[in-house]
Image (cartoon, rainbow, N blue to C red):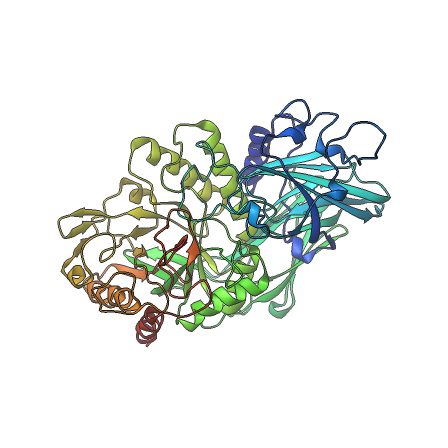
Length: 596
């Protein structure tokens, strides 16, 4: 399984980077020695791609990557980062400057930094996320390129840095294009830029680049450690002090060491008891520590089993929209606020829609006891027959899995959202499913599918369901179809006899707008939708969870109703300013009863 993941990582980097140096992914960078590059970066907006020099597709000698400085009376130069405006990193550019609010295109970032290389040490530039495509230069040397706006990547800079003063230039382009993932149209804001933290991470010459352990239904802990630069026969150790575990193994010719052992005693991780253990991995001079929970997740018939027992997923959808300040969420404070609302709602489960969120979210979910559905942005109508689009989707899936496969909270990998049924679409997503199962067989696979209605009968018959462990279905009865009071009249059929989760339902409301339950966009109308949905759910015995849409209002350029939406999707239970709507307490009370 791990060998396949290593091969896929190399394949994706080859396909996507071609002649340029490829990016890689380091394990648990937040537990390694690092130097933060967060803070002010100089920036140049470049809608015509002049920063590449004479060629608009690759860097030239007069391009911005050289970071030259203008001196009056000397050679002609038409840029100078030192005199250019500053943007804060992490952060999207749209909410930092009014003139960039609707900007989509190329923008160049530059920052000076001091670095002192250490012997027998490799240095990587870690970028938590850059939306959407990136080219990274250190001292005018192209160190890597990357495509995809929501997953981390690392560029080795060991041969590019020098002792003392250095500079980094990153070109980020967030244009929406047909062949990209996501594609041209989404129902969220296309926040561009270096939206997550940037740092320099140091590792030994031979280092652990991936490590994970998981609990099997038989009570055994299995896992593997991959060591870059290790010869066959290198010793790798796993130490879990609280479980009295000291295990060792040796690497094979691919640098992979596998582990399997029965712990003498173990407290399983669960939402009620989110137990984490200190785990230490060692290989040569490299030592990596992490907090790991152990739990099992399975399906049996139409039930979902957590640690061998049925669990009902009391969920809420979350977009990575920063509470109150707006823009892309990236900080630990953002994550605490969003996940604390989920806990206040009595949730045991969150769906991180519609793309991988910042790692603060999954780390805190581990600590707070929230199960997680994590998703890649294969959203609506992707370019299903384009090989490059498939490669990009596979890369994003790989990077999501590699970052979070050591998180006990993550139980579901989601392949897509609301994709219209077609043969090309189903074939595309089936390839992603096969990859996910190859890379991580310990978790369940799902997708958020479109519900098929025949009158007032909902039939869960999307052919993709045959390949999924858990069927996610979105429906908006009472909002996009029919009125709330008709909702209990709808009947549901599950011909595949699998666990079903209603992955989206709800309706919009402007916080503070009140009126009769029949008036759209009032808090009363939204609350009524929830109440009537709950009545309908009583007649769905195969229903194993619900995920209302959505915890907080979020920006979307498609939502333009003046004085109501004003550029926001208003389906949140909390406004973008942090004001709770009536439906918040309605869901809170419903979940409180489901807990009993």
